Amino acid sequence: MPRTFLIDERTALRPITESDAGTLYAAVDENRAHLRRWLPWLDNTRSREDINAFRVRIHAQENDGIGMTRLLERDNTVCGVVGFNHIDLLNK
Image (cartoon, rainbow, N blue to C red; front, side, top):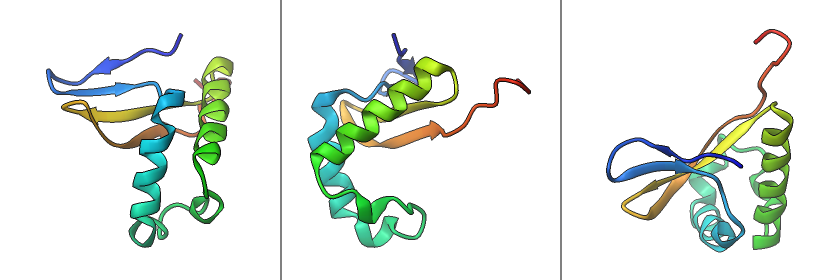
């Protein structure tokens, strides 16, 4: 089971759940102009279902030991997402 990391009493990095899809999609959609510079996948993310497909992919990566992504939450408010997109197991 993916683990939650407590940063301090107000901040946590936690697994993304299916119930986060709407909040994450709204944040992406609201900030497209700003995010487009760094996120090449942005224009292909058009719905909550796209966020859920992302969630399924990152959970599979974590189960395979090749990636880890967490939702950044402060005071129970979603602030963003952070992750390791590729963990090289061979080279540790």
